[in-house]
Length: 186
Image 1 (tube, rainbow, N blue to C red):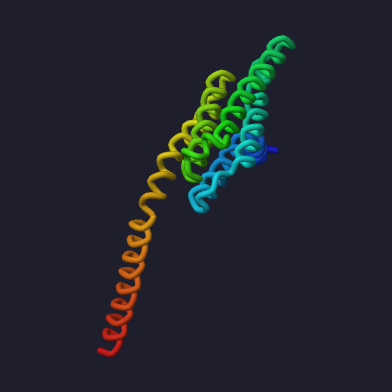
Image 2: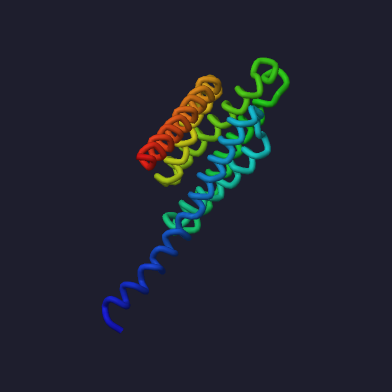
């Protein structure tokens, strides 16, 4: 086997190992994006969904920190600190659903508060594990909070913009078709 063949066979294995290694982080990001999309479209909080995402992110944090914690004592500390960290954030997330809190916050606000708490928990867990990927997911989640709020406030403007752009594209297509037909007649 020559060097070209060895490189060709090594590359797919490296690519597979990359995707396998990154799949928990990508899954956490996909779950977050899916939840953000749902919240922005339906204007309903997703209590149990964000609870499941928080537990999943806690597991990913432990998996991320496991290779660095090479001693039994360090691994125990990693698991215990992540359990306490995420238990605190899950408690805070569930406190948002108390009747006294719900009387002050509408469904949109509840979803945004839950997402903000989850993003803060993810970022802080990423700092403590340490995992720059988890911290980055926390930042992406935090940036989605004002994005969702802006989209909710700008829905009418965005709808009008889409209609205007669509009408302009249709008009340009018709104009081009007419000019192509006129050129063919000459």
